[in-house]
Length: 89
Image: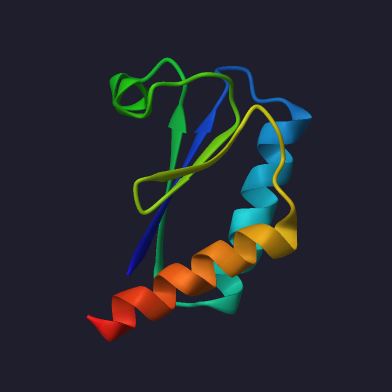
């Protein structure tokens, strides 16, 4: 199981919504293999990730992007590598 955390601004912006849509497409592509949580930047849990600038995507504890929308193919590749790694264990 790969955990994906999206830290969004308190007042979600277009970048936040674009990141969430991208993650939702990954969830559809990998049903049952991903765990997704969305956290507002003012939530105590967001402090764990050292919020720099939302949106932030954290995949299995690794900061993938902050303050921008990632390349969708790049994000998919990161997720797929982590899925392969979790299956190898």
